[in-house]
Length: 289
Image 1 (spheres, rainbow, N blue to C red):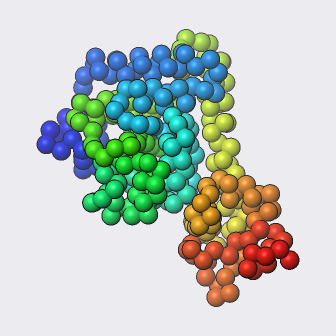
Image 2: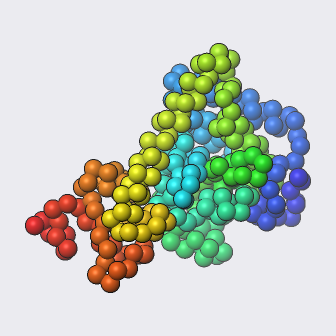
């Protein structure tokens, strides 16, 4: 699909967000990502190498790839830098942001200015936190095939501004190549099929650690509060946000039984700033008993 020339920074309005055909451009992107994969000496570093290559191909400050699971749970597959990783975790912890909109819509969502205007109003808390990390613009492109989004490629810039039409086309080609790398059992470098399967398994295993921990912790909080999975995850998110931590960190404390969630006196179980989850050995006011 050809992008409208008058609105290069609003791909969230274009159904599917497909890139126009340009074999040379697509080949350049594929070769760049393949070279990055080959140059990674450790198979576990291949995802991060792909994210770094995305940054070199585009006028952005950083990139990350998140894989979406059930019940709103996500895991970060790769990140080019600390800010990109923190931004991905921030959206996951808050359950809000461009990546969530991209997953829901199944189409690219670009936020060229998180400091003011429409984008800041659309995700007010996320925008405030992102700007605090030095992020001024975010571009989220869903990954998937046959209309099913399985994750997002998230790009960020430390300056306000949208992507030009040529850069957007490149971003969509990068999205397609990353989707292939994520879902295919054939990496770019030439190795045996058996080795390929082992490498893909190692990528997924390395990324799924936090994913599995959160699933397990959600189950424990469901029992503690007698709530459904969404409510349990919301409570964990609220706790993480109030304490300036990640959902994964909260999940580890729940699994280690260092943190337990208890119903509020009025029986309210929803997420909010008043969180009653407390660590073992702490009184209601947080003092050691």
